[in-house]
Amino acid sequence: MPQAFSNNVDFVVKDPKPTKTPKEPPPEPQQLPAFEPMQIDDYNDPREPNIPTSLNQHNPLALFRLFFTDEIVEKMVAWMNKYTKAHPFTADNAPLRQACSWTPINKREIYTYFRTVIYMGVVVQPSIGDYWGFSKGAADYLKSFISRNVEFFSTASP
Image (cartoon, rainbow, N blue to C red; front, top):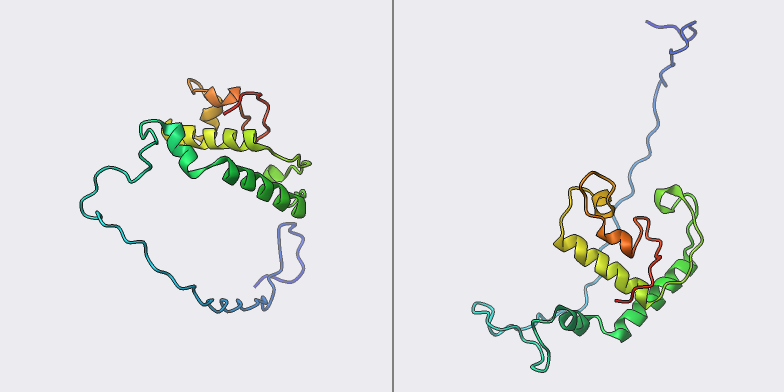
């Protein structure tokens, strides 16, 4: 049996009874709002997409703008700027533990982010750093308009 005192510097006395706090019970589920599923007439026989006839369905940008209109993107910019103003980064909650001051974003930067996410979904690389050319033979296309740490530095428009 080890003694409470020892000349061994690595010796650590074990606590006789470690104290643990019990987990809190999960919160009560909230009442769900009324939901009526959308009726899809051609569920088992899909044909052409149901998009406006005036829209060119072979134009990816036109399809993108069907869902992300300028009004929606402006709201996203306002929401993000409002949220980050109310919840500033500190050294504890900042990515990579590097707090930095927030500068308000704009529509161009949101479109740059979308462009990056879409590109990363189409061109698959083994690791995130490979998109910025940190390994041998990796493509570094994203370097031209966005840094890996999301500091926008391009003047290119979407």
